Structure formats: C-alpha cells, structure tokens
Length: 276
Image 1 (cartoon, rainbow, N blue to C red):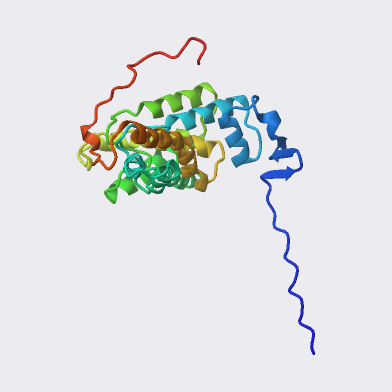
Image 2 (cartoon, rainbow, N blue to C red; image 1 turned 120 degrees about the vertical axis):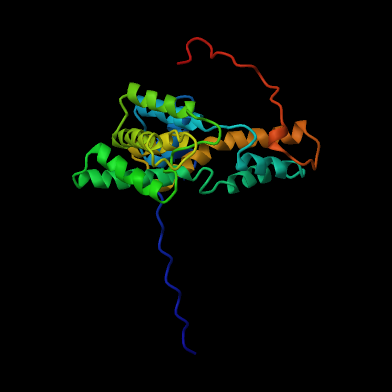
C-alpha cells in the first residue's frame, strides 16, 4: 500500500507587536508592567500603532487628538445606534458594537479621506505648484463637483473649537507640518470661494475636527488606514458612556428623538490649576 504523503509543515507567521512568554509581556519590546504608571494611554496607543515611543511633544499632541473626539452629544449616528440597542436591554458590548458599526464615510470617515485629499495637493506642490496654487486646485475640483472638501463643514459649528485648539497646539509644540499648512491654505481657498460670485454653498464650511486630526496625524506619519482608527479609539469611551447612561437612566424600549432631549449635567466649569 502506497504511503500517503505528509502535508508540508505550516510556516511560522510573524508579528512585531507583542511578545508573550511566561511572566513577561513585551509591547514593541517594552515590558508592559514598566509602561504602567509611566506612559499615558495615548503614548501607549502611539507606541502600539507606530512602533516607537513618541517624543514628549508628540505624546501631548496625540493625547489631545484622542481627547478631541471623545464625545459629541446624543445626535451623532453612532451614539444613536448605541442608545437604540441599549434601550432593548442588550449587553453593553452589543450596544457599543452597534455604535462602532455606525461609523461610515459621512461619520468618522472623513479623516482618511482628508489625508488622501491633502496628499493629492502635496503631489502638486512636488510637481512645482505653490502652496496656495495646490490648495486652490484641489478645493476647486471638489467645489466643481458640488462637494465640500473632506475635513470641512459641520452641522452645528461655524467654527469648530476642537480644530482651532489642535492647530494651536501643533504650532506651540512645533509639530505643524506640510499637511497642516496645506489644510490651512485650503481653508483660505474655500473662504475665498464662499465670498465670490461663484459660491455654491449656502453656509460656512469651516475646518472641522476630522480635518485637523487628518492633517496632524499625517504630519505625525500615520498611514491613511489608521486615520479612521484614531477616531474609533477616541469615540469608544463616549459610546460606552451613552450606552451605560441609556441602560441606567431611561426606560426600556423607548423611541429616541435626539432633538427632544435636555442636558442636565454639570454646568461649564474650569479645569483645576496645573492642568495645562
């Protein structure tokens, strides 16, 4: 009887993220127990995604990026999805998963799109265009198609305070790079269009937090695909908080109208001294 050939041995596959051995956990080479209490969460996330520890300036900048989108009230689609599942009595993990699944091109998806948009402008600059010429070209292309450029416009804000603060920090920390400069040039080009007789949009289209995150993340070296992941990491605590509040404060199986809610939380207050 002929022998049956043995299947070839499976090749080992590779991962460069975390090494696990008895009594030892190394994240990108650093002992996890040594990271605890010495690295902030944002710094640890940066290490895991990028492979190296951030400088103090980058760590502070990335922390601000993650804080910037932690929550935006009850009206975003992801928040409503999480609350609608929560009102059914589903487990917390299911509520949060529903919120994450609600991210799409029009909610949380602009970061990657804006990173690609800006790189198209930088390609034109490398071909000889000035900063303002490149900005005008890519903005005009969007306007001609009737689209607001990715990273601009907001349903509520005519000036997004989160974007303004991120730009301020990038400048103060000397992290303002070519993507941020091009985005600000695009902002000026869009304002010029709005003030012209060819204006197509009936309301202001400010740089929004997605645009600021896109430009700063690109300047920090993040890949396109990680742009939207940064938003996911940032918004996850907000989804958890909304799902938990829905389960603990509201009646089950209610119909949720986001325009019918009243805020009854803390009034505006100042951070304690020493919090910069």
